[in-house]
Length: 132
Image (cartoon, rainbow, N blue to C red; front, side, top):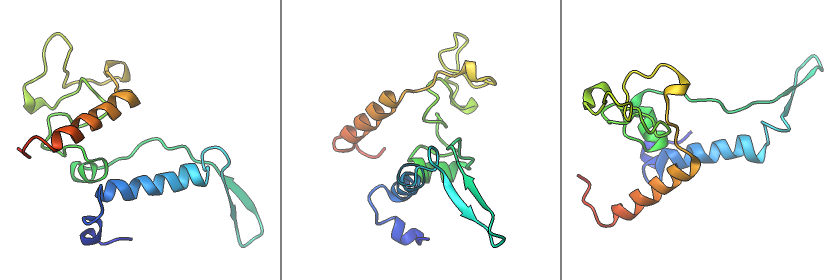
């Protein structure tokens, strides 16, 4: 456990810590493919296999761990390219942007390449654009 004052000194902050933990659990320990044996006092052993599915977070935690805009953002999910908040007034009748998606099929999901390119674009703009 790290204090938030220490985490803020790390480049990338909590996102880097979370990334390291996820890599440790799912890559180094291969929890998804190989699993982990858990021994009990009775002598019985079980193998735990886990697959990363989702995080449930509030806007503040989402912002800190994924470096996405929190509750006040227009786009509240970095993977959903076509979903915006109701208050943004960006939703249109054509379906390019939506506020009321209820099914997975309603989403225009971002690929790994799209997310990586977005991060690169933001990184480039960091050196030329003011924070506002």
